[in-house]
Amino acid sequence: MRQVVGCKWEGALYKLDGHVRAGLWRNGAVAAPATVRATIYFPESEREFYDLYRAHHAASSAISRLDDIQAAFRENEMSLNSRRLKHGLLVQAFTLALRGRIRVASDETPVDLRNAVGLFRDELLLLDKAMPSTEIFQTGVVAAALICLTLYPKHEVFFEKLAQEKGNKRDGLLDPVECVLSLVEKIRNQGTASIDAVQEDLCARTVRAFLAHMRGDPEIFEGRVNNTMKRYWFKRMIQGVDLDAYVKRVRRKKKIADKGEI
Image (cartoon, rainbow, N blue to C red; front, side):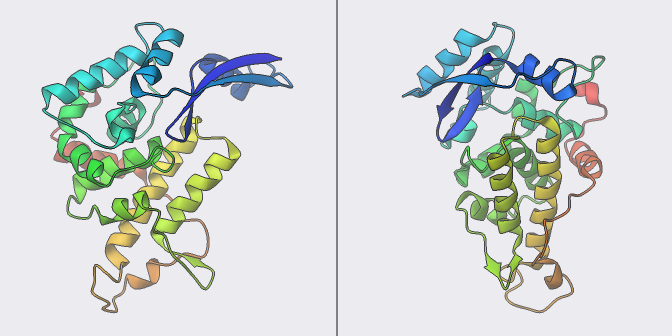
């Protein structure tokens, strides 16, 4: 038996330790135990939430990154209202939106968090208005929002519907919002949200759903019949886009020449 420590905050579970061990188990480097005991804390305030991170991480890890982002919010005169964003748990979302993957290679410099906050200031403020929840807006969804709102800043309605869980089903078909909601629910039920590849795939699929909604939403096109309407309803799980292509467009629009710049 092994033991891990976590906490539940705003309906979402956060793992506070055991990250290295979990990676070794997934990769098969170390045999996974038959049973793992989890100690779960239930913080009653945002400060308690941070204190738990501080108690279980070295100063150079998660809490220092959280502090960096909070400082960046202040530097950019950002006052966020949604608990999902103002908590500052955005490190992986920034990395995914700027590099197309969460994992950082050994020869790569980690994303500069303060620069990233300044870079995505407008997108963060726009997303914050939708009041994203921790349950729905996992890392992959937040990264997709940063990508999509950078490229299409006037189409935030998709993420507003996502935050309000206003997806639709019709005759066994799913609209783009419901596609993402169903995928997030599947990830939560399977307990795979902490796997980098799962979040990368979620990001790619969410971008595809956003595009389908933008191009085929009857509300946007005022009910007009057009060639893209057939893409609005899906029978099976929506496929992801080529994420690298969209990340390159984001980097061009943000005037980032190479990965070492941010």
